[in-house]
Each structure stands twice: as C-alpha cells, then as structure tokens.
Image (cartoon, rainbow, N blue to C red; front, side):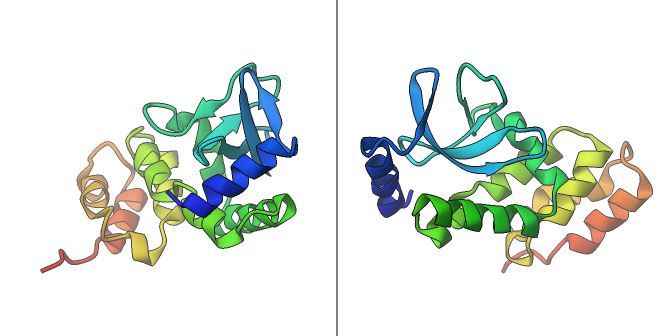
Amino acid sequence: MNEELRERVAALIEAGRTEKVGERFFVPIVTLESGTRLGLDEEAGWVSSPPDADALRVFGAGGERHFFEAVESKRSVIEDLLEQGAAEQGLPVEAVVLSFPAVELVAAVLETGSAHFARLGLLWLLPSELRQMRSKIAQLARSPELPQPVRDLAERLIVPESE
C-alpha cells in the first residue's frame, strides 16, 4: 500500500472533499458507463459505488465482480480515466494508477469461465503482467469449454516459465 496515497485520501476526507456512501467515505476516481463509480476508501483501498448504492463494495474477498464492468472498456481508456480522476482529486496520479488492482481483477474475471470475459481479461493484461498470470492463461489455453479463438489468444500469451 502506498502510504502517501493513504495520507492524501485521509486529508481529503478531513477537508470534506469526499463522498459518503452508507457509513464510509470515499474519493470517486472513475465513473463507468453504467454510472458505477470506482474510487478509494479511507484506507486507499478500491471500492465501487453503483448508482443509488447504500453501501460501498470493496474490491477483494469476493467483491471483485463489482468491478467487472471496467474490463468492458479498453485498459488504456480506464487508465486514462484513472489518471484524469486522480489529477482532479489532487491525488498522486502514478500511485493511483498503480494501486488499481488490474491483475487481480483480470484473475477474477478469468475465474468466471465466461468466454466473453476470458477474451476481455486476456486483452486487458499488459506484457509485464503475463508471467504472473501464466498458470491461469495456460488453463484457458487448454479449456475445452472455451471457443477456439479464445484458446488461441491464451496460447499466444503464454510466456516461458522463469528459470
């Protein structure tokens, strides 16, 4: 966790420049097409706030599905929105972008077994993330439940094992 980011979020909360959903404060960073907002909570952890939500949805521990809509957009678009939102909130841009749980989100998306989400998730990965996702990608490449084009894409993304 980036301590500077957590401190900056805490300062925004103290200054009254955040929003409150239910009992928790958060800094909205990105608004998705559905109106769901992604942002940072008091601990600089990622949360989502769907329209008319009465509580924030925390990323992780089964809450990843509340972030799946993000992979419907190109990764570069989401990262541009993260940069823009961070700058508008006065937060360190690089720290916000790097704190977004992209790899964990893709891992959760790939676990759904959906061919649609498998393809989107594979396309979301950056070259630097392929090695850590190698085993999940290899499983997709061998999955008889997925269409051949998705398996072919997965096969092309498998990097050699590190030595």
